[in-house]
Length: 580
Image 1 (spheres, rainbow, N blue to C red):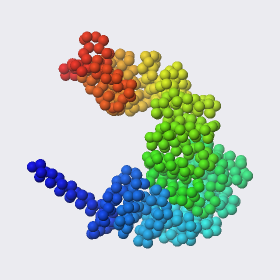
Image 2: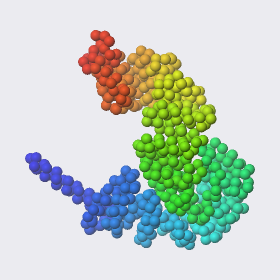
Image 3: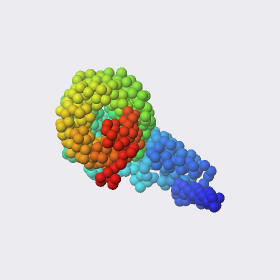
Image 4: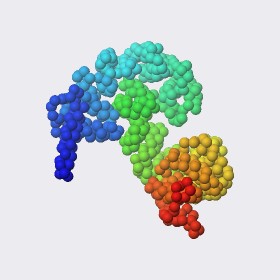
């Protein structure tokens, strides 16, 4: 019987493997081929598809390229490989395959984009226009086709024609006037037409205001920079003032040199703009294709390379993001911002010590900047190196010249580091200052309230603070736990049980919450359930110092068996509503 079962299992595996092999080859070959797949094809193809599904596009590109080499007459697979090569920045290889696919009558994203970009790279502006002229075959969106055509006209020397192409499109393409007029200005400026550029930039700003949209950092940077370069500082200052508080980082609108100096760079800027929009929409794979093409058209542009790092970081590819940030040209604030982002990505990849060292190096090259020290503090705090974190925050405050009204979150972070370092009086003062700055912020209400409860101080005030935090964030299990613990410390064990049960429902695998609920169960005589919760707490990887505490409760009960009437946890019997 066992032998027959093994034979059946072996036959079933063979059948499944044969079916999977055929399905894989049929999926890669459209229409399905009647020939047998070449040796090694299936393994490479399936490995590539699995890697692609996991977001490991670098591995997928390599494996599917191997499969394509074994079965080159598979257009569907070639399209997939082209897309992956573009994602990975292998533009020359991707463009070559895109040309082959075009000759087979294939189009769509990113085939047409690659063909156009390659012609911009070689200065073949007539070739660009030839592709753009056939919208059914080029696979380009109308706005990309318009921008490519306009910049190709500019590259061929027809500045007025290129600008007219963009202004005409701005009347017809709903919601794109700001972008198109911005490019019209850059096109005119790189062509030496300052008068036309000035008018186009004004039109772009007016369009943004008419649509009640904030001025984008790029529009401010380009338009204000134009006035800086043309001895009109007051006009530049007025544009930056319009941006106001809408710009998170002043460096995003700081004076820079002329961003676009050729038609090729102009189309690269267009691709960069679309990469940024797709990144904001979390369409990371498409965003990366646009950004890689933009990089190929202007490899020395730091903003493009930093954007590639941001997209990779958001995609969960921390090591690749770190490498991309390290490749950013060291111009202006990028000289320290890009290495700092690289260090953040190193930390995300698990190299905390390497990231900390990298952050200290950034602090050395940017001695007046507080952001690297704050980032180091956050990193060290997350690594439970609280004394070092507090020192990093102190350095940040020194670089800032003191703390101001906008530094509430820095106060909060420093307060946590101080509290965990055993410097409670300083921490308490900082928590209160952060609360005064940020108002009824539930995280601070909870942390300070819980700290007081745990220390047995200001219990009424602490309970009120935590209750306010719960009202503000009722779905936060950790804050609900704090309220339950406040009720427990106040001796209101029945209320604590009800609240801690809600906390467990919201955050079921937290060891501390499970421990707290076990304590509350014990106090109301539900000993078996208490033991169950403490064992659950141990199963959820608690901090090392918590393990012997919980183990002690399992041996002796929540109070260490001070009275003979209190049964040991392992021998406890439930009573009352617990069923006896």
